[in-house]
Image (cartoon, rainbow, N blue to C red; front, top):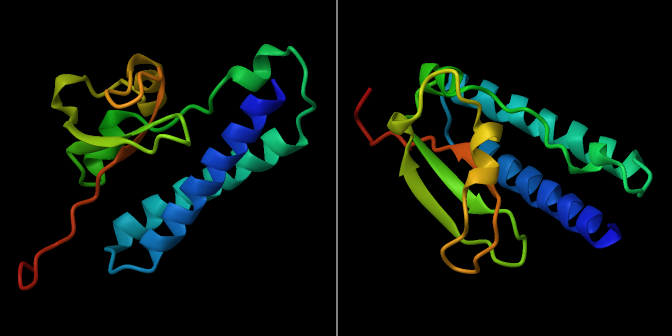
Length: 137
């Protein structure tokens, strides 16, 4: 159980690092707002996990609910990036989100993926914000 907690803390830390790097790029106000919200959610989840005693409790195993695909689509992205949940693997793949309905949460999709590289079941699913091309408004 301690190994899983450490792995999850590392995953949160990696996500926080990714979001910080994204915030250093050229983003629209909507993208920046979304990334800042996700960054705060990751920090909160990491703090909660860090303060949670290691035990057999199922609470430790539950993931925070993420936004719906409708909310994701409203902020622009139509594709998702799926990261392997095993922090040692770091494999990722980009997929189209069109196959799922608006009411599906990103967190609902996460346990359904199996990594093609290492076979680990479970993923970290994020919206994929495309970079605007120069001169496209």
